[in-house]
Image (cartoon, one colour):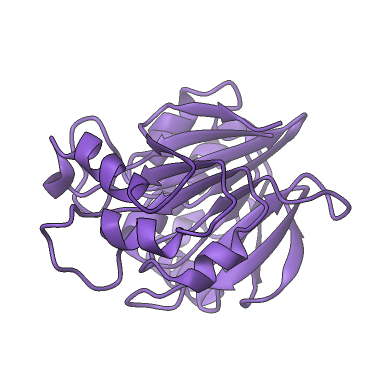
Length: 251
């Protein structure tokens, strides 16, 4: 399995970080996780391209995670691709229906399939086995664990936007690599997102090997090294700063 960080920014993107998006691949399987503004351009620069990605999995419906959905649909249509599946939490179908009611010339251009899932389900998405967990954010959302198939152990997990809590650490147990929201430094008092110290404390007893911090607001610029150190005060694994274009192979 390989994970490519397409976008590691937030609702306030910076020059080198677009909004949230991950590409999960294994052999000929390709799954786009979230599709914020700028992600389509990052995807176009990968070997898969937007032509090679026919399934999108959404963590939640905030704009910085869904803004490039219709641009992706239009690009695939213009490239001659005929299908797109969008999977996400309750409300995903309503979002797509509303977007297409505004941009009605795109309705019917591709075979669009929309599927909604709830926390606790294990489903097959884009050929991967995906397990979901409820997050703690300002709207309902889902974190995900990814395995190459239903008979394999999960190798990778993505927290989505969420506060840090012990239940999330338990949910991702057994995953070698986890990407987790770490939007702000400790100096910012925030709800719905973790600070580094809170994240480290929540993962103090975790067996995760590699924790990648992502979803950075501009407030974190110049503080990434200190943020990693704050997480590492309680967390025993290796802490990394994710960046746009970073590829991580998970054996």
